[in-house]
Image 1 (cartoon, rainbow, N blue to C red):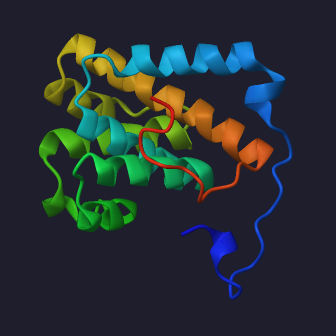
Image 2: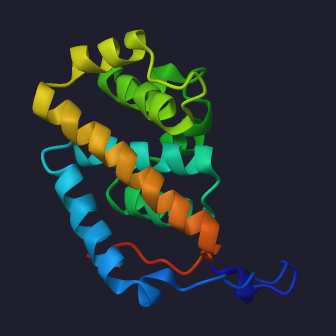
Length: 165
C-alpha cells in the first residue's frame, strides 16, 4: 500500500530532485560500488546493516526498500521490528550480526569522531579480514545512499523487491 491509496493519510511529499536522472553516471557508479561492497558478505547481514544505517539516518526511502528486500529474502518481521532496539533485543541476533550492527552505528554516527577500538575489535573477531573490509564498504555505501535519499527527499512506498536487480 502506498500513501496515495488511503484518503486518511497525509499526501506524499514531492522529491526535491530526481538525482539518478540528473546525474546518471554517479547513480550507475553507486550501483556498481554497492555490488562490489557486498561481494562475499552474508546477504542477511548486508540487509540488516542497510536497515540500521537507514534508521539512524532517517532515510525513509532506503528503509522502505531494504525492509521490503529483507522480507522478500525471508527475514522475519520480528527481527526487523527489533532492529531499532537491537541492544535491548540482542537475543534476536547472532554474535556476528551484533558485531556488524555495532560497527554500523559507530561508522554511521561517528559521535566521537572515530570508530572505537573495542567496536572494531569485536567486528574483527567475527569477520575474516576481506569480509570485514566488505562490511565496512557496505556500511559506507548505504550511508552515501542515505545522504542522497534524505537530501533529495526520496519518496518511500513505491518500491517492489527486486525492482533494481
